[in-house]
Length: 479
Image 1: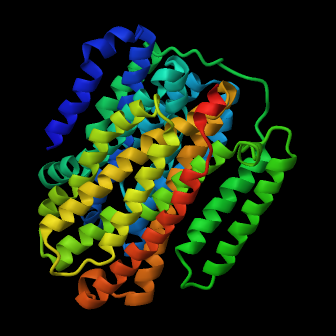
Image 2 (image 1 turned 45 degrees about the vertical axis):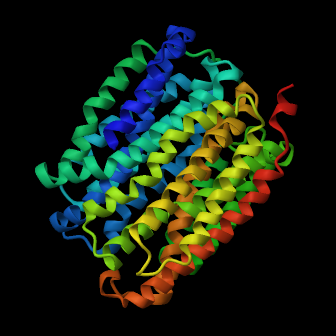
């Protein structure tokens, strides 16, 4: 299946009419951004498979082990908005190149980490590099392709992200079992070096290399400190410092919003949300979608292994059904959003996602594997229809000088949504299990907890239908 998915995307890029229509600048930008977009999710999902091996080698407790994943996501979220503003000031290409350098070096250091603490530190640095490429990748694509083709190339970008997510567990599992977990990082280094060489010698953009403006350092500090406090506090609510830290994070983020309203050069332009309904509602829809759906694979992986008694390899094979559909549909949905109103596609995708989550809220130990796969395929269709048109809307709703901010905002919504999704899971599990390991928990109680989580996620996603359907028409804005 993974070979089929890779072949499918290669066929899209290799179509003669697609190649002939592209200039050398467009072709180079597409290849480089697709490669970097593929490697980030590949590492995220691949490392998840390797966590037990890392835990054993470094003798980590559960909290320390979770931070190997959380540190990367949190670092990415913390830097996305400031980097987006910085890229608009200094130039997208320069920041993109710097991001590849940092990401490559940090990935190599992860492969040689001497202990768990250093691995977490290297993952923080890796998250910084990832934020620099994630923020600038979409603006580079938008800058070199005309508006009529944006949906198509952004759809391809989303498709390779899903491809990386689905290939990660397979590649990570093989490398971890055969050569050790460190080879997951070392496997990616040569590919990152290829992207780095191409970025320095082949990458050209039509975005102005810099624009007037200055970085609001006070706002950046308020944002970063507030987000770190919020996430770290929410993950330690059972400790004395948890709630104070959580509340402090909220207060700092409120001050950050006020700072953005008064600063001459804010890192986040509130006006984009207060005066640009299409941009605002599209970002809120993305935040809701990721908050509702990111924990799906995590929960279904536990269900298939704990309740159905499947091996990790068997469970991973079943879970491929969802990203497979996402990889197939994203390019088509993106291309379709160039010709019809994206709002219609995004709303349909959100409705499908919501109903799929509600179907999973009725899951039982007797639910057949066939039905589970059918629901995962159904939800994969929803995700595929939603993501590309929504990203196309976000990037098309702003001026060229704001592309970095727009891309950084969209990426921030994704990462914050992912962390919110896992935070909800953590809260429900702590309520049901009181610290008991999942594998030792009562099966009936476990089923109740995940059914509640799917119902909550369905309701969250249902709220996203409103923002998807009421954002306004992008075609009217572009006329």
